[in-house]
Image 1 (cartoon, rainbow, N blue to C red):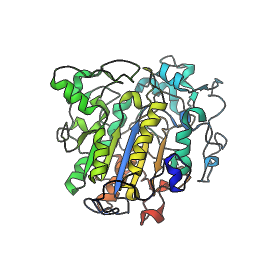
Image 2: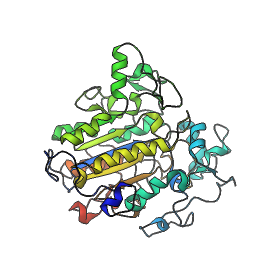
Image 3: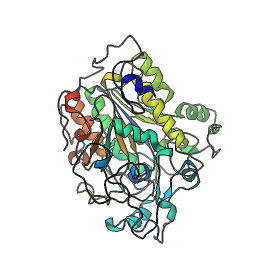
Image 4: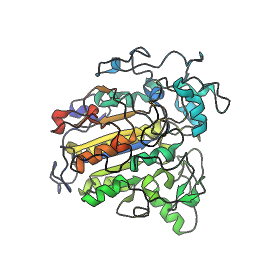
Length: 434
């Protein structure tokens, strides 16, 4: 475990400089200087698991206890012994993850959540199944438990809208509802190698537009993007990597532009300044060219998305490698890393969502795991502040746009910021919690 050399026991904690490019002075501003000492943010987006899926057996407070403390596993609620109907959870192992993908369409999740009763994940006539109630233990997700122990864990981070991945990803870009489920795909490279068939473009403002206007650098690093570009230039879809158990030339084995919310916008679509292959991340770290804001996305079979022979260990390996790359670079000392999940994937979680957003009227989905690591994380903290993907947009605005949040006029004006996950002494100035 790399982090042991840095004096901590978690899987990986970014702390101090590394062996990256000697051309960059650690701590220097690589563009407009931020409000805090956080000069770089790396956001890793995995897929389709609830908080209880991964942390229901790590937390030790009684279900429903609503602990007020905020340090350690005793300060978040364990999952109950059974869901409201009395069905006990199955073990969420690699094998279970690979064999079953819960229905996670908006209509299904609406019925399962049942107005906050969380009682139809087994009995819903639309999509109920006992396998929707599943909890991982240390044998499967110890690596994430270690990250939570050494970093900061949000136990009230909800998927922004009921339904599938693409709709939820849009909140990372625009902090607003744009479309339902996976209804449309960007008119971008890879659209012909997807199960989504309706192309679409949008022109509402995004956080990337705000960053660009300010001169703040940003990029999306998508695994498989270069392979998709090369294959489409030759008129075919990429071959599935040998490691992808599904063996298909579509998701989860190849890049899918619907996973990249900024691809829905013409100014960013397949623009090489912003859209980069995931392998470029290491090159940019080594060359001292990491953007101030980076998003990182694995191929589907490394995203932990259930079904299609996709296991959890490959996703953990991808996340671990990404964190290690940052930790070994000259960016380690001034980088905040966030690991989050686009949505809960149709799995049960025992905590009801908050009321529908007053901004766009859309109902929230289940909690998803979100962990903050690095020198700015509030070590060992458990935040009970209700947050969602728009909270990251709000933080980017606060940190780089003169502390002026809500500039998109969407949920970024209403959701809490991420300060409850951060150490104010390390950030230099306290990041707001509201």
